[in-house]
Image (tube, rainbow, N blue to C red; front, top):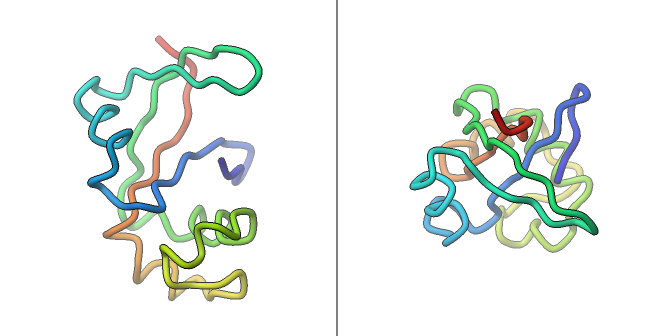
Length: 96
């Protein structure tokens, strides 16, 4: 999970065909996060033009994702924008 501007985001390093991404889309964003506690959330897919800064932050936090995304922690914002169409990003919101 990446935090940018006080907002939490989930990034699919495996792209749009990852099972969790398909499940979130099928559930219209309704999800449950488990991280020591259970949290009901709404995952809102971020528009492609807005994904770059989140991807840049994520690359700094997730070394295991770098090989999947093809960029390192020093990637430029332009490089992050270039991969944004193939990397789903979801904003974590409280469940309605």
